[in-house]
Image (cartoon, rainbow, N blue to C red):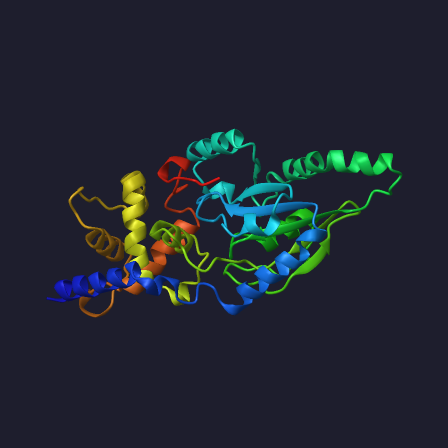
Length: 309
C-alpha cells in the first residue's frame, strides 16, 4: 500500500514539474536589475566572456545575452570541463567552429584553459590595439565582462584568473549579487556580474538541465521529482553508470521509481520500518551527479535541438 501511495504522490509531482509552476521565482528582482546594469555597462566593454557549463552548453547559454552585447566580440568559456564528457564536447567543438565562434574549455578550480582564454582575448583585441597604436593613443587596459548563469563558477574563475581571492565564492547559486570591477593585472580588467537566468524557458529540458546542475536553487524545486527525471536522463545516456556507482542491477522495463528505491536501499536511505527516505535519496543522487561521482556527462549535443543563430 505504501508503494502505491508513493507512486501516486510522485505522479502528482511530475504533473507539477510539467506545469507553469516550473517558472516560479526563477527570475527574481535582482536578476532583472542585473539585466539593466549589463545594458548600461556594455558600452565600456571590449570583450565579453560568456561562461557556460560544459555539461549543458546550450541550456546554460542565456538567450538574452546576444540582445545585450550586440556586435561586441565574445568568447564562450565552457567551464567544469573536468565534469563533462569529452567525446560529446567534440560535437560542440565542431559546431562552434562552423559558426566561427570563439570558445575555450576551462576548469576554473585548477586553472586549466585560462592561458588559452588570455590568448583569445589578445587575438580579438589585436586589430583594435594596432589601430590605437598607429594613432598614437596610449594602450589602455582591455575591459572584459563575464556573463553567466547562477552557479556556473564565475567567482572561482575570476579568482583563478587573477591568482588570488578577489571575489566571494560558493557552491550555491546567487553568491555574487552586484556588478564589480576587478583589475587582474595591468592589461586586463573584468566586470564581474551576478548570475542571471531568463524569464521563461521555452523547452522543459532546459529547465531540467539547469536544475540538474544546480543553476536553480534546490530550495524552490521538488528534488524528489527532479531526481526521478535525472535517473531517466542518465538511463537514456548510459544505464551502466548508475549500476556501477550504486552496485545495483535493473532491467530495461523497471521504472525510474523502482531504480530510485534500489539506490535508497543500497545506500541505507531508510526511515522507520525500512521504508525509503526519498528526500535523502534524491539529495544523494543530485550530489553524486554534480560531483561527477556517477560519471562524466554532457547532457546535450547540437543535434538534440534546433539551435538558432
